[in-house]
Length: 274
Image 1 (tube, one colour):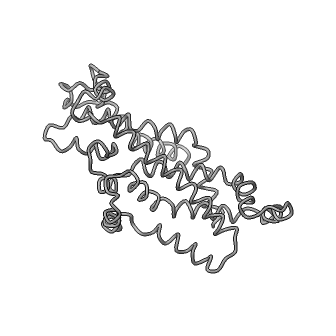
Image 2 (tube, one colour):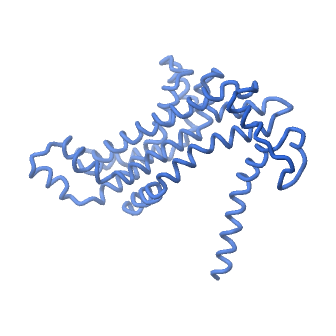
């Protein structure tokens, strides 16, 4: 049984990593060899990466600007979602107020609603406030759809903390804010880092709302810019794969930097709520 499970794991791993290998392979392929089938290339080249970094092709003339847009939106989403989740989880799990259980239930209910279902109303709302083609509009969209899950995970984790936290704060004369910053916040650092990482990756991979809310070519994030490669009959697939490879590096670095927090933090929140 162990042999078959190991074999199955290897098959799944190969199946998962093959698209990544194919992406890197195409990014190193010269244009003349682009449509020659095979699992390896005879004359690998870094020219596509040189074009990308130097913006020496019409498809990548705004590469660094578009990459910075993705980075700015993702970082702000991460910070705001972490703040909302920390404050909201403290209120819903550690404070007593009327209709607290209903508020928690409604928060989870908003997570169930598909984000695509609200795309047109959200676009209309941003247009009414003259926020179309601004990074703020995309940040607001990402925070809206990433916060419910973050609140759910952190709230369940907060409920597993002992009630002596508030008692210790009361003995020391600490108010609500002091209890939050000095006692509660240090205890939720692992799941908070996990939530921040989740929010960053959520915004980094977003396409639909980025396409709807950002229109200027100099202002769109890279996922939308990469789709523009496919608007021509002679799409430069090798250049597209080079851009995709570069774009995949930041989330990989972020994931492996906070891997133990990401896995442990999200699991701890989910398990404590069961």
